[in-house]
Length: 253
Image (cartoon, rainbow, N blue to C red; front, side):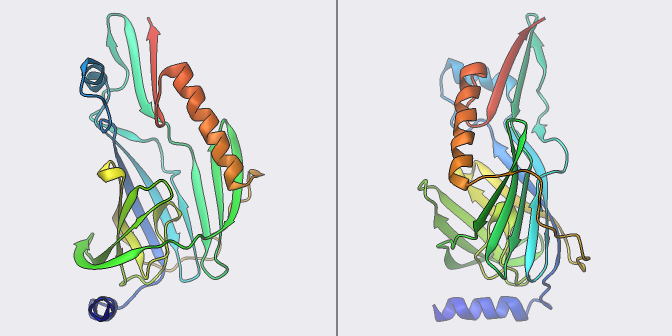
């Protein structure tokens, strides 16, 4: 523990003047082939489904608050294999990516999330849940910043890895993540199937009005919203054969 404390102190002081406000552009990358069966069905899906889908999001932060949004345009496939036509059948495979805005007040320890679901907007107000991160002494450079590795196991028993930098001493990160003594620069979940990486870091003064809590939407509890998400997922599976947010549509031409 003494060695870890020493590393944190060195990273925050030796490697440059600590900044506490700015803008981060993250890239989320999803391996859409992960979990597909190793049989004929899996092979057929791989012919039409791009292996990776990427999307960008933005985090604005200062010493007391932050706002995260994925409203930066449509997601992209790698390679672009959508709308493949074969035998007069049009096949579309895409990842559903609803709007997500997350405001965090680091002083009052509260969060307000605006989420889109079933063509409606919802507001979820909650306290910032304390995450039981375990910080390791492992370090590496991420996007030009010296970072330490931390991990936790969530309620679904999935292991989440994060790299954070004490050089930016703000306890926040992408997707409402936080609770570490520094900004989260990289996240890996679901055995590496789902990653979020800081691609562009702009340390600048955040002007008044740039970080504002979302106000549009019907207020709803987190538990009720999660029940609605599950209902929609089952509906998609029944209608389109989609699973885990992946929607597959076929249309005769």
